[in-house]
Image (tube, rainbow, N blue to C red):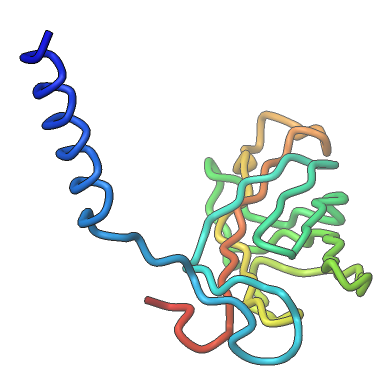
Length: 151
């Protein structure tokens, strides 16, 4: 019986020391600039289907619809590559909400301490297949513009 108590004490002490001296993981700092409660986060890719909503910290993005798709079909020779125009709704937890029409040729844009860009829109058109507007998937890159965000 005495042997079990000593083993229990040694194991308990080992667990205590392990927890006490194990390395701590640092959380992303909050409220670095401004007065919002956004967390500083590294870049993230978000893929959304038409009508779907994605979240990045306190930012909400809705992929409302594809307005136009003028990309050159993959099986055709074209002079211009063309682009896709998307309708996106962005909102934050303070109730600020905007709706944008953004093109794949437009580069990135900023909203409430975030930089957003369109990385890819699938499926890519071909001359033989008509794409249903509900079949599109947009991949967006979202990153914080706050200090220390791009670690």
